[in-house]
Amino acid sequence: MRYNALSVIKNGLRGNIDWTRAWRDPEPKPAYDVIVIGGGGHGLATAYYLAKNHGVKNVAVIEKGWLGGGNAGRNTTIVRSNYMMPGNREFYSFSLKLWEDLSHELNYNVMFSQRAHINLVFSPAQRDALARRYNTMLLDGDDGEWWDRDRLKKRVPHLNMDGRYPIEGAYVQPRAGTARHDAVNWGYARAADALGVDILQNTEVTGFVRKAGRIVGVETNRGEIRAEKIGMAVAGHTSTLAAKAGLGKLPIESHVLQAYVSEPLKPFLDAVVVFGVGHGHFYISQSDKGGLVFGGDLDMHNSYAQAGTLPRYTDVMGCAMNILPATGRIKLLRQWGGVMDMSMDGSPFIDRTEIPGLYLNAGWCYGGFKATPASGWCFAHTIARDEPHEANARLTLSRYREGRQIDETGGGPVPNHH
Ligand SMILES: Cc1cc2nc3c(=O)[nH]c(=O)nc-3n(C[C@H](O)[C@H](O)[C@H](O)COP(=O)(O)OP(=O)(O)OC[C@H]3O[C@@H](n4cnc5c(N)ncnc54)[C@H](O)[C@@H]3O)c2cc1C
Image (cartoon, rainbow, N blue to C red):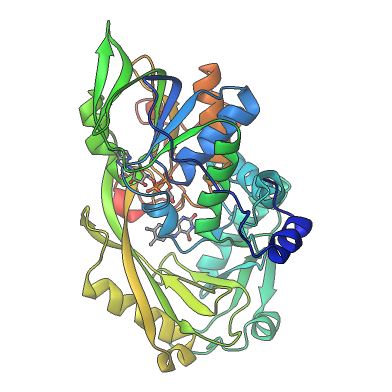
């Protein structure tokens, strides 16, 4: 069923009884051409582009819980492409272009809002570092601007310009913004299902089936399911599942990251405002329902808990009060955590593995929501053609061995520093 104005009117007049389910709830088949493990945004997008771009429609997405129960439904929804390093640069730039047409592509409103991403600058050194980054973006055809104090104050009137660290201005990406995370998952699920993909929720992969050195299927709580090719997109659970597949120790650690949402407010902030590098780490925007959505750094210890601890909470609240003192008057409504797949250089992997038939999509750290469309596009390409797309050619597992780290922040080989 197509979603459009006419169908809204027709169904409204008929009492809304004719809407069909957005996706089916099928029984698993004994075998598929491709299995994608993980029903987050990346897994669902991969299945959609496998069917749409490569005609591979005999596909199952296997999700142990519900769609979007992982990080895809827990993030602060920031979408941008202000990356500088080769590898990240072309990949995230491609992703932002896909976001711009995603609602039409999926026939589902993902509420992508290009409200600008404002990166605050507090010192000359920070300005120089960001100037280099934003100039690199301009050279590649992306957008980036310097805003002085007056322009910044006009756009974000609540900003405390002369606090403990006076704000000098900001580097801004106007095409960046936010999207509705659940809608992205549901949009990809519905579109993939319409092309014949089976979405198997409440189905956990507990092991792998091997034959002559290849992986030829998965063991699940609903029985064995065979496939010629298997892609893993399980974010924070990558290490545990990779160990079951026999992939050895991957350059990935699991860390918890918290998010916070306030009570709904009148319009307060119509852009994404962030700061980082040397002055703490903080990002905030306002959702369409009115809640302020914000977060900061990792909790800095390995964890599989989808919660968080008090020290990070107090730190993030301090950052909020520092730049937006008015937030001290609002109530916090909700808080949660997500389990991040932090890589050693802070950049992701979309690659084949050393095990024939097994493909890896991981290492998204806390930036993988914005990657969703390109990640799905490139992972589908890698699985279908057994070679990378040009946008993920550098996102390989072998890059550490080859001395080609993609260390965007210069944090060094320490996962929680990225
Ligand atoms: C608090 C927070 C804020 C963030 N903010 C941003 C942001 O503003 N912008 C941004 O770009 N990114 C952000 N991120 C990162 C982003 O959310 C993730 O990188 C992205 O959602 C990863 O998507 P995914 O599909 O790979 O993973 P997930 O959505 O986590 O999906 C993986 C799925 O695999 C399933 N799974 C695991 N093991 C198995 C198994 N054995 N069998 C079957 N299924 C299994 C899980 O249940 C899960 O649903 C944030 C993350 C968090 C937690």
